[in-house]
Image 1 (cartoon, helix red, strand yellow):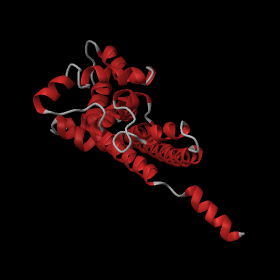
Image 2 (image 1 turned 135 degrees about the horizontal axis):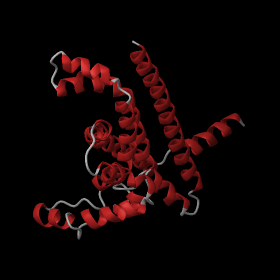
Image 3 (image 1 turned 135 degrees about the vertical axis):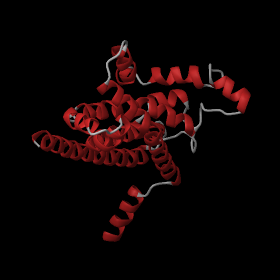
Image 4 (image 1 turned 90 degrees about the horizontal axis):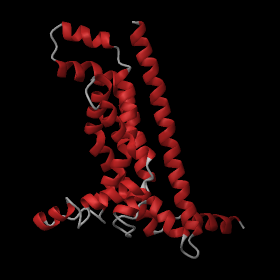
Length: 245
């Protein structure tokens, strides 16, 4: 009886090659997405947190627009822009032979578009909470603005920036609408975890495989949220001690 139970559990929780492939592809896409948006996200967050300029509200709205739009809309716009017949995609295809749509690189771009606002929001909040007095002191001592940023602002805001990157990573793992619209659902190429779950729910006898991937996705997402919460608390305490000092 015990042996049969163990055998059943092994069968239930053993991933198939296709499931492992979807998991590894999701990890690759999410990691690449996080790396792609890291520097632009910090730069945009600093711009919105520290500078005042004409059109700032419009820029802020455009940055955060993917958060309120149905994901299929950014995916469709990416298809119009970077698809093989799109404004930029057609030129890339004919000039360099490069195709972005319906590839894993396109999945990275779709995930980056959807994760970028989360990265910016978290990093912007962290940068805006950095004590401006510390930055002013550093500048008064002759430090160049770039040096002030890298030695004062960035270290103090780092927990919030890391939190933003974690949220963007998690968002990438769960991205569905923009991805399936822009790059499709191609096994081994663009079928990430959410797309694999959707696929298995449409197949006879695919419920168990879908459930396995759901459990994996929920575990990763929960772990990421817990980690971001811990970092946010540490950032708040750190900034609070700095303000007291």
